[in-house]
Image (cartoon, rainbow, N blue to C red; front, side, top):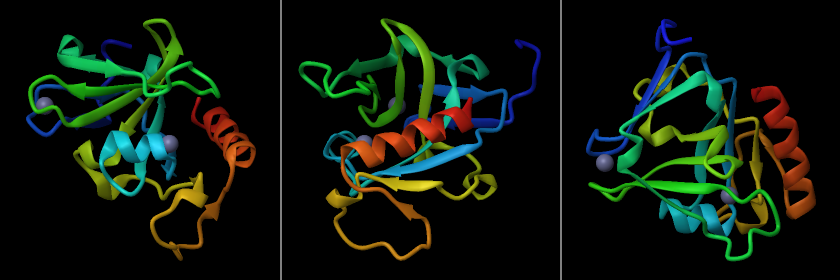
Length: 157
Ligand SMILES: [Zn+2]
Ligand SMILES: [Zn+2]
């Protein structure tokens, strides 16, 4: 995989933290949950989902990870990573311990946003700041949102 070309690149605001994807991410989602709002400082999080095996993180020691759920329940309990230098939200990861299975890459950090697919859905839409009329599926509540997320993850892998 090391020799595969980078098809998508994202970096934090100051450029220290970089992720290079070797496979074009297929799945994009918008999450309106309160944790995503707290992490991004935005009304919702707009991310691409990518298998961690298809991406390389550069300067990962410069990423400062936090978990926003105190007891790790309900799942999924993502690690939310900020750059130590610019302190801006950069990436979220899901896996076991320090072993990443999925990466959630912020669209705001991606170099060529034009090439990205549209979001597959809005999750935790009940926490929206305002209605969004984009014709994209809306999922409200924990179970509906998680079911939609599970489908997207299968699609992303
Ligand atoms: Zn930075
Ligand atoms: Zn969320």
